[in-house]
Image (cartoon, rainbow over all chains, first blue to last red; front, side, top):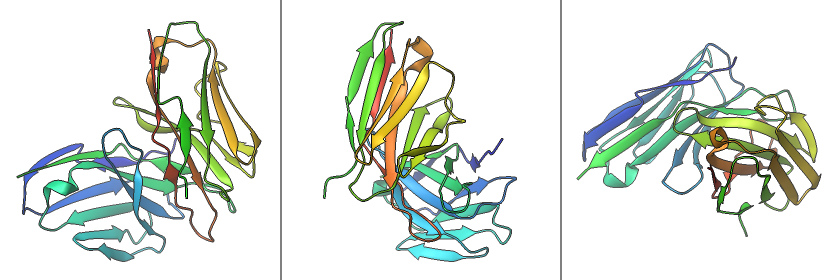
Length: 113
Length: 115
């Protein structure tokens, strides 16, 4: 069974603090994506990482793909209330030519003013 | 451009009734995914299609669930008969293959409550 574990499950922090969210699996992904979901909406893509060791930055968000392509982390610097939401990682376990995205268990972040 | 369109947004039905959820993917996208989201189990992949062909339905819970994609612009997910444990938000997503990866574009979801 392909399983993506995220930690922590819940996180409540003050505005301005830093935080890191983790995504781990025992399987190797061909690529990994991070999504954010707000209440009543579908997830929205933040970033895709493909190469082991890859680091991508999106404003205050830094994404890293593990060297072995089995894990990833999302670091937020100086969190803002607008960062509140459910963060989901998704690994691609598809066959060549198709994409099969399996989502992690999710991290629910609340940033307090 | 219109995003992924799902209907209905909300459905409340009684146990044993048939439920049909509908999805219109983004024009030009060649992959379509059905997911189910609950607090307990998170976002689960039920089935996905590529060029209208079902590729992997191993996530479909049981024979009560079926999905079709008769053409590139329409897909349905049917539950017959429905049970209270089917209560969840069902999402449809589409993507366009782009080399190594494809970004998933999600609809707003169909919230199903089975009484």
